[in-house]
Amino acid sequence: MPKQWPRSAQAYTEAVQLMPGGVNSPVRAFRAVGMTPPFIARGDGSRIYDIDGYEYIDYVGSWGPLILGHRHPEVVAALEKTLKEMGTSFGAPTELENELAKMITQAVPSIEMVRLVNSGTEATMSAIRVARAFTGREKIVKFAGCYHGHADYFLIQAGSGALTFGVPTSPGVPAGTASNSLVARYNDLESVEKIFQQVGEEIAAVIVEPVAGNMGCVPPRPGFLEGLREITRKYGALLIFDEVMTGFRVAYGGAQEVYRVQPDLTCLGKIIGGGLPVGAYGGRRDIMEQVAPSGPVYQAGTLSGNPLAVTAGLITLKILQHPGVYEALEEKGALLEKGLREKAYDVGLKVSINRVGSMFTVFFTSCEVVDYETALTSDVDRFARYFRSMLEQGIYLPPSQFEAAFISLAHTTQDVEKTIAAAALAFKAVL
Ligand code: PMP
Image (cartoon, rainbow, N blue to C red; front, side, top):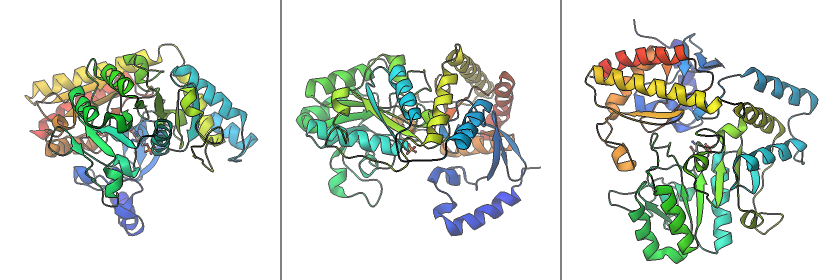
């Protein structure tokens, strides 16, 4: 008997009358997997529960922040303490902010100075503004398939050519804005070189996800990030790592620790807010000192550095400092990857699995996925069938082929084994 979601269906019917697509962020509507979404009632550790009473092992983790799982007791206790003893918001400095800023700058040595904001989008937008002001240049380079939030100049993707100059892909993005965003190919330094040879003196910054997560998980090829560092340095452009997803995820010090490349600016979000709304951008002191009020580049926020959000971030980072944490994530990731590969192989299904630590994607293609174009070779109908079978079996994955799934410290070996067993059936359902 397939699962039925009568209460969620009813809630969704109401929601679509009230909010565009019934949601407050598009992918939540489950359009890519041909169904309407279960509404969530609560979370606990590695599990979430919907309002129809079904339980799932959750591999979304609120899209990355919940590396400790849902309602981690220490996070809950810390939040209760701040709420009871302090309050919700002041719009004035607090010692908590010093503490989080200290933890971030200590974790990520390229961040000498940091500014807290409320989302990843704000972090990337602000980093670009600072980069433009600092260099006195307007153009930026981004990569097809990378997502940096929803600011106008990021909503650009490549055409079918190796690189495309500024084609807006969302209506509402002014053509003039789009023309300043140049799109290169992920893992393809030549595409970057070409842009720099043409307009290198006009480029303020290259922004990149050092491990891409927003076209599914796509690791950088050896030399790619180093190459970006060299090219930007040569032309006097800044290198911005968007570590909103990878920061404190692939290692405590983020992707820059793993790949040993130092950007000029780094954007953070997700994990540093422990499940509450936070973002941050930071980097070289001489660049960050351009930000108001120490410099002329304006950027502000009513709720920036909010005590509750900072509290959740602080306790999360403290727990991530425990020895063996990232080893445990890697171990679970490796176990899951191996199991998924074996089950796909057993039924003769061609998949391409990318994983960096606790971030992973199963692509339904035989092609090695190294960039946007190869990601697009995935069979999204097969993905949808896989997704629905997994959901039926109580495994909650990101509802799109082009998203990374996340393992948390709350996932147990049994959770992983259960997931592998479910995948064995789901892979069969795909064929
Ligand atoms: N950058 C990256 C790499 C992201 O993954 C995201 C969100 N998925 C963002 C920026 C935007 O963050 P937010 O949704 O918090 O605005």
